[in-house]
Image (cartoon, rainbow, N blue to C red; front, side, top):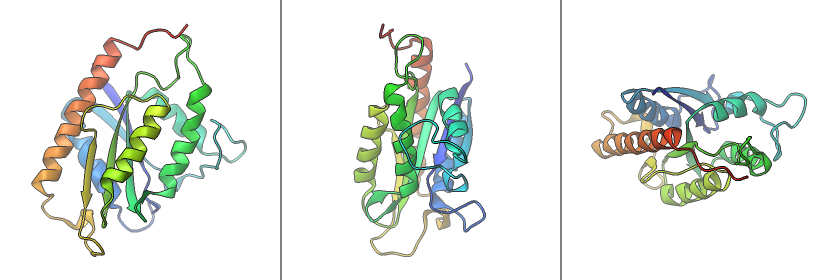
Length: 203
């Protein structure tokens, strides 16, 4: 079975700007999943004009609807964010706010439209806070219908008030590489299980 994943890069940087450490981490996760037969598309959210709101379509000029379609067409969602002020990025929070609409949207079995999809998290930053950020993202993603596998986070944080970015590390630390492999392995495994055995009808 070929699974599809969509990775949301919630860096504050547009693609035309400087390189993104979040993009580098998501690339490692995508490569690990590719070894397990998963095709991943990465979307850099800052490149799109995602309007504020909590519906699936906030009207003219809103770039969220096609992103939403790609999320729901995938088996796996990977949400990647940098840490800013100890928090997920504002871009990440905007995406989560828009997924709040899933709470009231149902499929033909009465289930939340996001049911059956597995979510994992990727976090980078130059300060402590990866566990705090992942806790926020796990709760939000689970609230809007995603299933979280075991150990579903790959992260790296540098020295407090340091100047080194994750993308500048060469080679990638062994612990990050082994964790990325574990995230890919557990996420793909759970996605295959749910594809073969969907959640029961809510009707």
